[in-house]
Image (cartoon, rainbow, N blue to C red):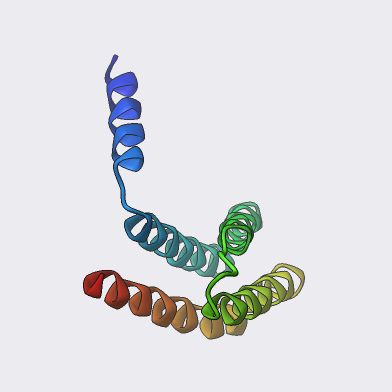
Length: 121
């Protein structure tokens, strides 16, 4: 029963989020998965590394798929997401920590920009 109650709580929380809150949650999860990939790489846990990078890719693909091209900024975000996907592919293929180091601040800056925009709305 405890798991069921927790699952219901999570579902209800997600259903009541504003689009801005959901976007921030996705960026937080992206940052968390990048950190997890970085740690897995250091520990040479390639199974966790691959799962983390795969989840990052899924999040970015979702962000890209949900862009509203009625806004000019969406074209720039689309390019940024393409860059993220390219870098994640590079990361997956090369397993180089430098790629994570390049991506983390970009994700953080974009997340912070959306957080600031959410405050103004």
